[in-house]
Length: 343
Image 1 (tube, helix red, strand yellow):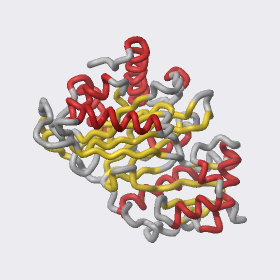
Image 2 (cartoon, helix red, strand yellow; image 1 turned 120 degrees about the horizontal axis):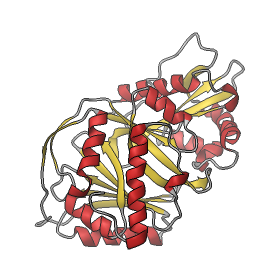
Image 3 (tube, helix red, strand yellow; image 1 turned 90 degrees about the vertical axis):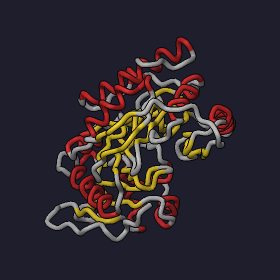
């Protein structure tokens, strides 16, 4: 990820000091997580000072904290590069001590991380906000972020009676006037709707081509912290159907609970991959704007029980529309075993 450990500015005049997290803060962060979540926080490393220190030392995350006058940690947030896309910054869900909410700490901490992301050179920032803790969604919305994806069951712990889900609230830092993008016909309207909310301009829309001539370029990995199997189709080739199926089988055999597929919509072969993915139970999840084009997110949650009616995003019309769109796909997939086209 872009180096951002030296760009957190000092803040003055606040009762709570917002600053870069230090190794000696790790026990205080673990205590904060227990205060907020009990034993249910999805990222287990945050509850373990040794693992958290290792994550920081390895450069996996750049965290910031809000510290009270006596040094007690009352707020935590972290910035990292989004998996597989170093130009997209991922802000983790902001955590504020329940005793200190209502004092704008979350907003100040969020602004701190946004400034760091801008200085680090990220093109886009997206905030992964847990649906069972809507105050992080409220902070993101107040800072000009818009819902761009809903990831069902993306986190392992049960904080709402089922696996935790996330809403990605996204803000484009560098204006995006994309050239031709190959939007899958089944999801063209919802993609254009999200792009409009994010201020993204698509100059032209291609119909896509059946991939021929070269093999696919694909990567996959299992996120052991969350149990999510991650797939990145970098370039669709003639063998896209086979390599996608092989990745799905490998990740499920490795214990993946949910699957997330990333497709670059500046690739003419992406609409064909979408059709193949839908045949195996993937559904539309949302988009993320990258440097050179739109990244389409698809998800497969067939191996877990996720009820969209138990997911409560904050009172945002765009979030409700997106969740409703995904809910229709879930219902259709469970009835037919295949995702709908053009819901």
